View 1 (cartoon, rainbow, N blue to C red):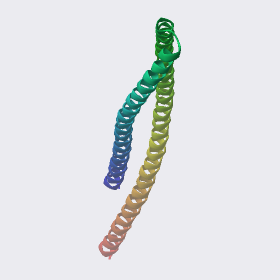
View 2: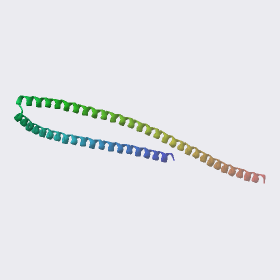
View 3: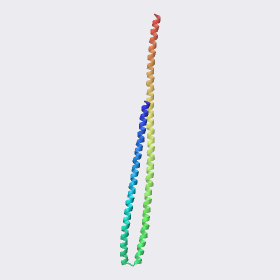
View 4: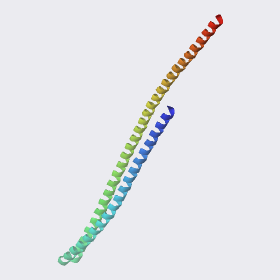
Length: 178
């Protein structure tokens, strides 16, 4: 019975290990796909941003030439230059804000993930402990039941041997008295 229990227990442990491995593989695959999509998104985004920059550049040059026709060259160039510098500063500021927000969200998600993962690991440990204690108590009950059965069987065999001995003694005494 102990070998059967051990075999069942080992099979259960192996199944749990296989389940953990499968979940790890699924997580790894999801992370890889996410990484691949993020890289593809970055390539597309950079291309679109470059195209937008080219279009803005062309449109800006057309706009500048119209201004130069109607206004004095120095005032228009100075105004456009100041606007461009201000826009670049604003773009740098917006990109910085976006990067900061993304990093904050990433940090927040990592903390939530870590907290959730630690909770799950703790819960798994508690469940494994409870299941182990249940398994141990069942095993101890089976052991005590087996001991009771063995004692009863040995008692029965001993009584039968004693009965056989008593009968043979009675037969022997009966023959001796005759």
